[in-house]
Every structure is written in structure tokens, then in C-alpha cells.
Image 1 (spheres, rainbow, N blue to C red):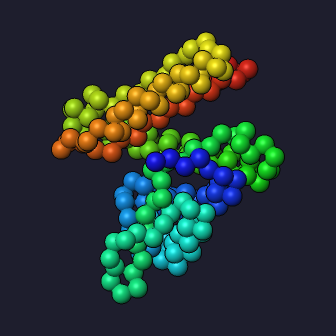
Image 2 (cartoon, one colour; image 1 turned 180 degrees about the vertical axis):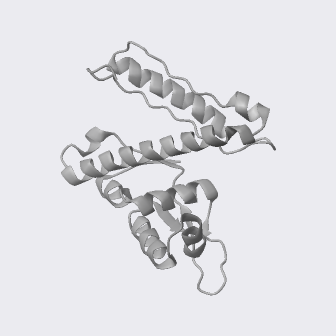
Image 3 (cartoon, rainbow, N blue to C red; image 1 turned 135 degrees about the horizontal axis):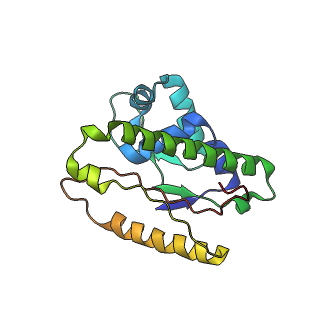
Length: 185
């Protein structure tokens, strides 16, 4: 299930630790603040505080996993988040938060891709062959780019719905279509 972020949600999520906490819960499943703090290299107090901030806007929720004593388990409330920059045209703070989020995740994607490139020699031949980097130069209208993205999203959702085979691993798959800039970059 996906959530289309409201202005309030994106303002709360536009924080390095909160963004990482939500990502960790989405990828790793339910966890305690202590477990997340250890995983992300922060302290339990800060982790607990930021989890409550995310819960206040409906991005994370307490999980029913039984804990020991006062241990609280948290889970992501949605599988993914989406937004369009134009959603926040009348809200400068939310628009700034959306820009921060886009830049934050672009840096994270780059870091993850670079880590794969550094370490791919340690992986199996099958995974090295399956991993792919492609870039395409297309001449499209805004309407065509939107249609292409919707088609790619539909294919991804079809694969997401399949039960994972025994040898499945979590895979990063990025799609980022945008118009080239006047300087040719």
C-alpha cells in the first residue's frame, strides 16, 4: 500500500534520521527503537522521539509484536510514499521539504549504487549479470513521459505481487525520468 504524502507528512519526514527510520522499517520489518538505533548508529532516545513524530502523522505505527517489558515495536504504516512537487505549490515549507526529500534520496541512491559497484566482485556471477545500469535518451512530451512512468510502475507492481522465490534478495530499482537541462547535462 502506498501513501500520497500530505504537506504535514512531508514536513515531518524531511529529516535525515526520520527518513532513514522509515526506510529501515520498510525494508527490515518491525523493530524496536533500540534495534533501530543500533542499526542506524544513533541513540535510543533520539530514535524513540523521531518514531513518535512519524507516528503522529501516520507514517509508522506500533506493531502487535509482543515485546519484553515496556519494549515497543514499530512498523511502517505503508509500503511506499509518493508526492508530486506541485502538490505543495501553496505551502513553501512543504515544498522545501519535498525538495529536501528528493535530494536526500538521490544522494542515498547514488551511495547505494556506488557501494554495489565497489563490491560487485564479491557477488555471484548470476547477480553480476542480472544487475544492470542503463540510461536512455528519449524525445517525449510531458504527457508521454507520464505515460511511460505509469507503464513502468505497472510492470514493477506486477513483479512486486509475485511471491518471492527461495533465492530472492531485496533489489534497488530506480526509475527517474526528467527533462535534460539546457546546458546539455
